[in-house]
Length: 348
Ligand SMILES: *[C@@H]1O[C@H](CO)[C@@H](O)[C@H](O)[C@H]1NC(C)=O
Ligand SMILES: *[C@@H]1O[C@H](CO)[C@@H](O)[C@H](O)[C@H]1NC(C)=O
Image: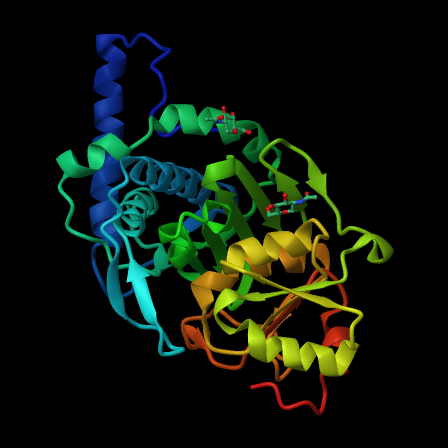
């Protein structure tokens, strides 16, 4: 079946008779919905096509990313401290985070029982405040439709699916005008495993999608495979806020054979692995799962993974903590051979 856009342009003229039938059918479905799905206990399972969840997730981050750019143009970020991060640093929150988050949740909540895990709670913007940042669904749809059409269908039970979203990764850098680090991400988790990830760079209008079993593809339709080992830059990307400690550790393991590059955003650092401009992404302090989920899905699709520094792949089920306190090692290939090099070194 072909995709139907969320707000399809009407192409069919309706007969009054047909209209009546449609109203009857819709009414009947609604009734069935009320009876079966709103009745609380013994709720039957809802079936979804993974492809549809992916479409909504992609539409959502493109919408969110567009809003991030728009707020940036207004030069009124309203940055405010959100509190302290898990590393004890001041954490920033801007209007861009909130508006992007609002638009993303608006779209994803069209799946009534989808479990959504987002960095921000839905804020109380009125429709009038949000409207200027909303893109035409149909136009966004058209720009990603060709890619989404290539994705195979797969039936899933909605209750097994969780979607992680990061409405604005690298907020700190965003407020400093370092927009190259900014990404908007969505990730689909089945059971505890990230199976689909999308990272959107709004200021460059680039999206990278990874679906396990299907591959990694850019918004221009280019398939990405890991860059050969020998052509990969001998570089470790690390968070700008704790580059010093990682530098020490990397020097112990690699001597001067690896360079350290401090960079903002987990999404951005993952993209550097994807295009081979870095070989390793290391993180030695706590990190939230919505920062890692999409990148993790993409790396797993390419044959790599994100491991914590005890060697466990990150897990994303509702039983797993949202905060990973065990550090992070990420690569596009052989994550365990990299991890082995760090055995016996006190990292955390
Ligand atoms: C962004 O990229 C998409 C797909 O690559 C394209 O269809 C769209 O026109 C681009 N948008 C802008 C504003 O350049
Ligand atoms: C690699 O990816 C990063 C992040 O998307 C981008 O800034 C950089 O230009 C890319 N480099 C190459 C050579 O593709």
